[in-house]
Image 1 (cartoon, helix red, strand yellow):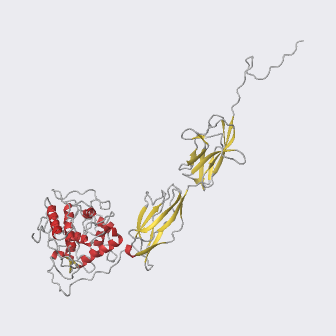
Image 2 (cartoon, rainbow, N blue to C red; image 1 turned 180 degrees about the horizontal axis):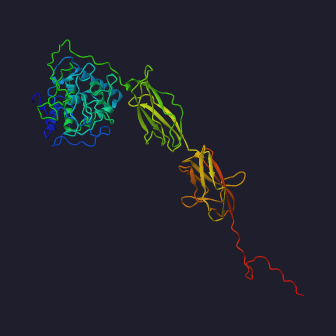
Image 3 (tube, rainbow, N blue to C red; image 1 turned 120 degrees about the horizontal axis):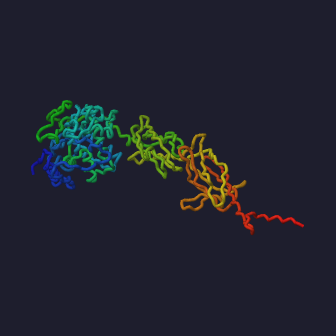
Length: 571
């Protein structure tokens, strides 16, 4: 087979077949165990689906910007076992990765593996994406701090041939205040960078034009949604989330496999720039936009074998998730609230490193645990907040639900097995200190219903007490009232007599109208006692009387029951 196959790709029916064939050839001849990419459909790029929840609405980190489509050569970059850190050019030029770019990829791999080891991010995947997106930052044209010497901008995403994405950064990164453009060596659109941007080189800026910042952001983006990149399906989904094109997937996979076989370091500015982009005919470089400096042809590398021109990478700043050693309570205090109100206190923690110094920029997760309907607002029970300059972070306000009882607010560091900080929280029921009813005494005849329904008003400190629970119980009268077993009663859902009702609740004005009350065949005086948490109590006297007896008719038909007076004697 020729040393190089399909160096350029065209969009269309044959592009993915060429890629698949090239990767299959690499797998068969040089890399046992390599899984070739899935075959594309006959029409070229195809819709992949709705995508991951964390990807932007337009479906990719790049906004569908064009990319370089040429393939790697089929000859092995380095033989198995050869170092991938050789300081001079060896093997095919395409296998050379500029020094700062290579350092950025490896540092990103180490950082992501420390914070999310389950993702299994390989730096060669970042190299494959970096090659396809920008030709490794235009052949490594970066300064000593890793920032590109001139901006790398994609085309204007105005819907003409590409996605239509209105401006999201006011032109801060892409210089366009009307539409977004992909920015930097890893080609992030500003809206995606706003979520995933990183400061990996410790200069205090999250700069998409810096290869260290961009590589670490790309690594985190690829690992989103709990992906394991050692699993082929997750690997494909990660690449497609970057640019939702099957051709793109296959091209990145081909470079990924190529770099896995070996690579070597070359001086910055001497890398090989790919030939073709997906937005122009094969064999032509895209015309730069007026605001995009045209890439210059790199000079032929002439490094000295003994004295390579290798820049010194910027000082390593370990990510906050690596530096933190513990979380500590920062004077939160007692967390108590009445049902339906916000807790006055808010869980607060301090992030410290091994030397006891504060760690800023650390993502701390607060989670509500336990059988409770309390939440951070909107029903949300888990939030993530970043520590400030002093290493302190405060959770959003916790709002108590209607369920009384205890629960826990837990603070932890995602991706680290550090001791958590638990805060005990308690919700108490709503209370009223006063109950008032206009009904002081009600009367009924045995076997009938009480004519009037009882209205109760509950207040707390003189204000209406809304949603307060009340209990109504029929008691015997006297100095020591006891629960009555006969006499007035309410009806349950089945219509059966019940003399104690619980779970009654006042409305938003603190008012409650009791259900209808009935009298059985027991005459006498009873007490209806209403109580509520907080001490509010009111008693209402219930008098049940027997009906008047029916009059008895006399033998003469008179209804007078009294005897007739004797007639006086006439003689």
